[in-house]
Image (cartoon, rainbow, N blue to C red):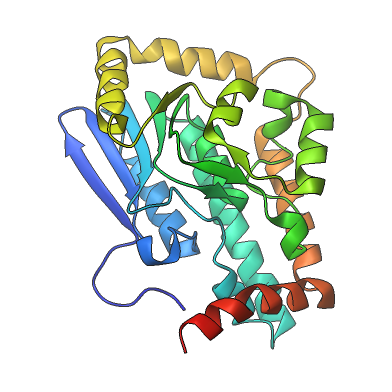
Length: 265
């Protein structure tokens, strides 16, 4: 199910001191794979001289989270399935931590839907611009997965534990406008004005001292009484692997994929 051909999973555009990183699996909704996330980590490590990093998706989605097809393809071998889940979530956690460790400001330019663990890539950025027709949805209750990507490690800091728990249980689809009102999004823009809005943010950040953004982030992340983010993310990884191999989760994956398979026959 992994993408074939020469297309790289991540596109990197450098314009002076501005780096734009584009998740590049548009036919799969930019679903996350270890290869894509490893490429993202390598690219982030090479942003030492950047003044701003933009993370966005190619095509109509920001990212649909983990690729269900990749999980389901391994359901015949539970050890292989668990190992893949561990590999994927570990790579996602590394990418989240790499975003938090950037020596400059980061912007999530959310050009379309964000589902599952992809939320972590958005929440790890310093600022979020979202298209008005985008949305956020967990999908964990529907699939039988444990939440990963910062749903329990980062989201409660934004909206509170009770609200996060209810969202995960109900699996609500939250519009861009609602996400803005919840404090998850900093700027909204329509399809026709999205690029201009992003340019405005880039121009602002490029004129600012990047040390202020990085120092502010470090101080916020080190608030007293909080477990280190890496520890919180690792607890998510362990829980994800535990639930992934259950018969209930495997049957839910098969049911989710069945309509898609019928559609391509």
